[in-house]
Length: 230
Image 1 (cartoon, rainbow, N blue to C red):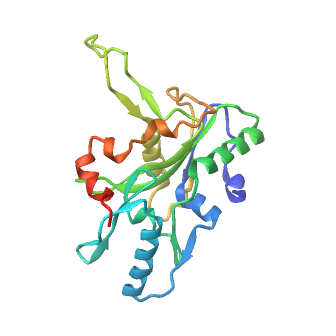
Image 2: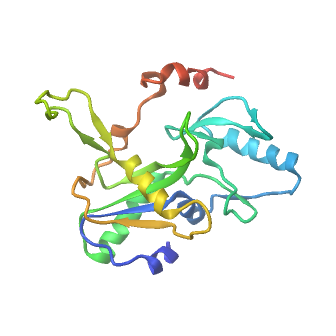
Image 3: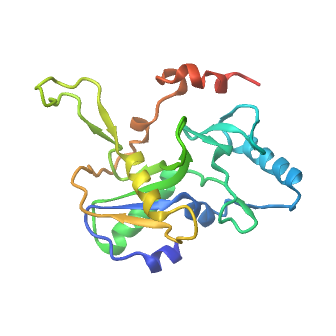
Protein backbone atom coordinates (compact mmCIF):
# COMPACT_ATOMS: atom_id res chain seq x y z
CA UNK A 1 0.00 0.00 0.00
CA UNK A 2 3.03 2.30 0.05
CA UNK A 3 2.45 3.42 -3.54
CA UNK A 4 -1.17 4.21 -2.72
CA UNK A 5 0.03 6.24 0.27
CA UNK A 6 2.12 8.41 -2.06
CA UNK A 7 -0.66 9.10 -4.54
CA UNK A 8 -3.71 9.58 -2.35
CA UNK A 9 -4.78 13.12 -1.48
CA UNK A 10 -5.45 13.98 2.14
CA UNK A 11 -8.60 12.08 3.02
CA UNK A 12 -11.42 13.92 4.78
CA UNK A 13 -14.28 13.03 7.08
CA UNK A 14 -17.00 11.21 5.10
CA UNK A 15 -14.82 10.06 2.17
CA UNK A 16 -15.29 6.71 0.42
CA UNK A 17 -12.17 5.16 -1.09
CA UNK A 18 -12.85 3.08 -4.22
CA UNK A 19 -9.88 0.79 -4.96
CA UNK A 20 -9.24 -1.42 -7.99
CA UNK A 21 -9.23 -5.09 -7.02
CA UNK A 22 -6.00 -5.65 -8.98
CA UNK A 23 -4.10 -3.29 -6.71
CA UNK A 24 -5.29 -5.25 -3.69
CA UNK A 25 -4.42 -8.54 -5.38
CA UNK A 26 -0.92 -7.38 -6.33
CA UNK A 27 -0.43 -6.12 -2.76
CA UNK A 28 -1.18 -9.67 -1.55
CA UNK A 29 1.01 -11.30 -4.20
CA UNK A 30 -2.00 -12.91 -5.87
CA UNK A 31 -0.24 -13.14 -9.23
CA UNK A 32 0.64 -16.29 -11.16
CA UNK A 33 3.19 -16.11 -13.96
CA UNK A 34 1.94 -17.30 -17.34
CA UNK A 35 4.18 -20.24 -18.17
CA UNK A 36 4.01 -20.20 -21.96
CA UNK A 37 2.93 -18.17 -24.98
CA UNK A 38 1.25 -21.24 -26.47
CA UNK A 39 -2.48 -20.48 -26.55
CA UNK A 40 -3.61 -24.00 -25.68
CA UNK A 41 -1.15 -24.40 -22.79
CA UNK A 42 -2.04 -20.94 -21.45
CA UNK A 43 -5.72 -21.80 -21.46
CA UNK A 44 -5.02 -25.08 -19.64
CA UNK A 45 -3.09 -23.19 -16.95
CA UNK A 46 -5.88 -20.63 -16.57
CA UNK A 47 -8.54 -23.35 -16.52
CA UNK A 48 -6.76 -25.04 -13.60
CA UNK A 49 -6.57 -21.75 -11.72
CA UNK A 50 -10.27 -21.05 -12.33
CA UNK A 51 -11.29 -24.46 -10.99
CA UNK A 52 -9.20 -23.81 -7.88
CA UNK A 53 -10.43 -20.26 -7.29
CA UNK A 54 -14.14 -20.55 -8.15
CA UNK A 55 -16.76 -21.34 -5.53
CA UNK A 56 -18.99 -22.83 -8.26
CA UNK A 57 -18.48 -23.20 -12.01
CA UNK A 58 -20.09 -24.46 -15.20
CA UNK A 59 -18.34 -26.39 -17.97
CA UNK A 60 -16.47 -24.19 -20.44
CA UNK A 61 -18.13 -23.21 -23.72
CA UNK A 62 -17.10 -21.35 -26.85
CA UNK A 63 -18.08 -17.82 -27.87
CA UNK A 64 -16.36 -17.09 -31.15
CA UNK A 65 -12.78 -18.27 -30.73
CA UNK A 66 -12.77 -17.81 -26.94
CA UNK A 67 -13.61 -20.45 -24.37
CA UNK A 68 -15.56 -19.07 -21.42
CA UNK A 69 -15.93 -20.57 -17.94
CA UNK A 70 -18.82 -19.04 -16.01
CA UNK A 71 -18.29 -19.04 -12.26
CA UNK A 72 -19.63 -17.83 -8.96
CA UNK A 73 -16.89 -16.34 -6.78
CA UNK A 74 -17.56 -14.60 -3.47
CA UNK A 75 -21.30 -14.26 -4.24
CA UNK A 76 -20.51 -12.73 -7.65
CA UNK A 77 -21.46 -14.16 -11.04
CA UNK A 78 -18.39 -13.59 -13.19
CA UNK A 79 -16.32 -15.39 -15.85
CA UNK A 80 -13.11 -17.17 -14.80
CA UNK A 81 -13.51 -16.43 -11.06
CA UNK A 82 -12.37 -12.88 -11.84
CA UNK A 83 -8.92 -14.04 -13.04
CA UNK A 84 -7.58 -11.55 -15.57
CA UNK A 85 -4.60 -11.08 -17.88
CA UNK A 86 -5.19 -7.47 -18.96
CA UNK A 87 -2.50 -5.13 -17.60
CA UNK A 88 -0.94 -8.22 -16.01
CA UNK A 89 2.35 -8.02 -17.93
CA UNK A 90 2.75 -11.78 -18.27
CA UNK A 91 0.81 -12.75 -15.14
CA UNK A 92 -2.66 -13.97 -14.29
CA UNK A 93 -4.07 -11.66 -11.62
CA UNK A 94 -6.35 -13.46 -9.17
CA UNK A 95 -8.89 -11.85 -6.91
CA UNK A 96 -7.55 -10.77 -3.50
CA UNK A 97 -8.28 -12.95 -0.49
CA UNK A 98 -10.34 -11.88 2.54
CA UNK A 99 -11.24 -8.65 0.77
CA UNK A 100 -13.41 -7.24 3.54
CA UNK A 101 -10.70 -7.88 6.12
CA UNK A 102 -8.09 -6.21 3.93
CA UNK A 103 -10.32 -3.17 3.40
CA UNK A 104 -10.90 -2.98 7.16
CA UNK A 105 -7.12 -2.73 7.64
CA UNK A 106 -6.89 -0.02 4.97
CA UNK A 107 -9.74 2.00 6.49
CA UNK A 108 -8.18 1.83 9.97
CA UNK A 109 -4.79 2.78 8.53
CA UNK A 110 -6.09 5.94 6.88
CA UNK A 111 -8.38 6.85 9.74
CA UNK A 112 -5.31 6.94 11.96
CA UNK A 113 -3.10 8.66 9.38
CA UNK A 114 -5.56 11.48 8.62
CA UNK A 115 -7.24 11.71 12.02
CA UNK A 116 -10.75 10.96 10.77
CA UNK A 117 -13.56 8.67 11.92
CA UNK A 118 -16.00 8.38 9.01
CA UNK A 119 -14.23 6.55 6.18
CA UNK A 120 -15.20 3.59 4.01
CA UNK A 121 -13.58 1.55 1.26
CA UNK A 122 -14.95 -0.50 -1.65
CA UNK A 123 -12.99 -2.99 -3.79
CA UNK A 124 -13.85 -2.53 -7.46
CA UNK A 125 -13.68 -4.90 -10.41
CA UNK A 126 -15.53 -4.98 -13.73
CA UNK A 127 -17.73 -7.57 -15.38
CA UNK A 128 -20.31 -7.86 -18.10
CA UNK A 129 -24.06 -7.88 -17.42
CA UNK A 130 -26.22 -10.61 -18.97
CA UNK A 131 -28.00 -9.44 -22.15
CA UNK A 132 -25.94 -6.22 -22.30
CA UNK A 133 -22.79 -5.26 -24.20
CA UNK A 134 -19.98 -3.57 -22.32
CA UNK A 135 -18.51 -3.80 -18.85
CA UNK A 136 -19.72 -2.35 -15.57
CA UNK A 137 -18.16 -2.02 -12.16
CA UNK A 138 -18.98 -4.44 -9.37
CA UNK A 139 -17.95 -4.50 -5.73
CA UNK A 140 -16.10 -7.60 -4.53
CA UNK A 141 -15.89 -6.37 -0.94
CA UNK A 142 -16.36 -3.31 1.26
CA UNK A 143 -15.84 -1.96 4.75
CA UNK A 144 -17.07 0.99 6.76
CA UNK A 145 -20.51 1.66 5.27
CA UNK A 146 -24.01 0.24 5.15
CA UNK A 147 -24.22 -1.44 1.73
CA UNK A 148 -27.94 -0.76 1.28
CA UNK A 149 -30.09 2.35 1.27
CA UNK A 150 -33.38 1.18 2.74
CA UNK A 151 -36.58 2.63 1.27
CA UNK A 152 -38.85 0.26 3.18
CA UNK A 153 -41.43 2.19 5.18
CA UNK A 154 -40.82 5.35 3.15
CA UNK A 155 -43.54 6.68 0.86
CA UNK A 156 -43.48 7.01 -2.92
CA UNK A 157 -44.76 10.12 -4.75
CA UNK A 158 -48.35 8.86 -4.34
CA UNK A 159 -47.93 8.38 -0.57
CA UNK A 160 -47.85 4.59 -0.81
CA UNK A 161 -45.49 2.90 1.62
CA UNK A 162 -42.68 0.95 -0.01
CA UNK A 163 -42.43 -2.62 1.26
CA UNK A 164 -39.43 -4.19 -0.45
CA UNK A 165 -37.15 -1.64 -2.12
CA UNK A 166 -33.53 -1.40 -1.00
CA UNK A 167 -30.87 0.36 -3.08
CA UNK A 168 -27.56 -1.48 -3.54
CA UNK A 169 -25.06 1.29 -2.78
CA UNK A 170 -21.74 -0.53 -2.95
CA UNK A 171 -22.20 -1.87 -6.48
CA UNK A 172 -23.48 1.52 -7.60
CA UNK A 173 -20.36 3.14 -6.14
CA UNK A 174 -18.17 0.44 -7.70
CA UNK A 175 -19.70 1.15 -11.11
CA UNK A 176 -18.93 4.85 -10.70
CA UNK A 177 -15.39 4.03 -9.61
CA UNK A 178 -14.82 1.68 -12.56
CA UNK A 179 -16.03 4.35 -14.98
CA UNK A 180 -13.52 6.88 -13.64
CA UNK A 181 -10.67 4.35 -13.32
CA UNK A 182 -11.11 3.13 -16.89
CA UNK A 183 -10.32 -0.24 -18.48
CA UNK A 184 -7.19 0.52 -20.51
CA UNK A 185 -4.07 2.55 -19.87
CA UNK A 186 -5.53 5.22 -17.60
CA UNK A 187 -3.43 4.12 -14.60
CA UNK A 188 -6.04 5.31 -12.10
CA UNK A 189 -6.23 2.53 -9.50
CA UNK A 190 -8.23 4.44 -6.88
CA UNK A 191 -10.95 7.08 -6.67
CA UNK A 192 -11.99 9.20 -3.68
CA UNK A 193 -15.73 9.86 -3.44
CA UNK A 194 -16.41 12.96 -1.39
CA UNK A 195 -19.59 14.64 -0.18
CA UNK A 196 -22.02 11.73 -0.62
CA UNK A 197 -24.82 12.51 1.83
CA UNK A 198 -26.54 9.13 1.42
CA UNK A 199 -23.69 7.09 2.95
CA UNK A 200 -24.16 5.69 6.44
CA UNK A 201 -20.80 4.88 7.99
CA UNK A 202 -20.35 2.02 10.43
CA UNK A 203 -17.72 -0.01 12.29
CA UNK A 204 -19.74 -3.21 11.89
CA UNK A 205 -19.20 -5.99 9.36
CA UNK A 206 -22.35 -5.73 7.22
CA UNK A 207 -21.31 -7.92 4.28
CA UNK A 208 -24.07 -10.40 5.16
CA UNK A 209 -26.68 -7.69 4.52
CA UNK A 210 -25.69 -7.44 0.85
CA UNK A 211 -25.32 -11.02 -0.37
CA UNK A 212 -28.00 -13.62 -1.09
CA UNK A 213 -27.44 -17.41 -1.11
CA UNK A 214 -28.03 -18.67 -4.69
CA UNK A 215 -30.94 -20.90 -3.63
CA UNK A 216 -32.82 -17.91 -2.19
CA UNK A 217 -32.11 -15.50 -5.03
CA UNK A 218 -34.84 -14.37 -7.43
CA UNK A 219 -32.60 -15.77 -10.20
CA UNK A 220 -32.35 -19.18 -8.49
CA UNK A 221 -33.62 -21.10 -11.56
CA UNK A 222 -30.75 -19.69 -13.62
CA UNK A 223 -28.17 -20.23 -10.86
CA UNK A 224 -29.29 -23.79 -10.10
CA UNK A 225 -26.88 -25.46 -12.59
CA UNK A 226 -23.92 -23.97 -10.67
CA UNK A 227 -24.94 -25.83 -7.52
CA UNK A 228 -25.08 -29.32 -9.05
CA UNK A 229 -22.22 -31.55 -7.94
CA UNK A 230 -19.86 -32.41 -10.79
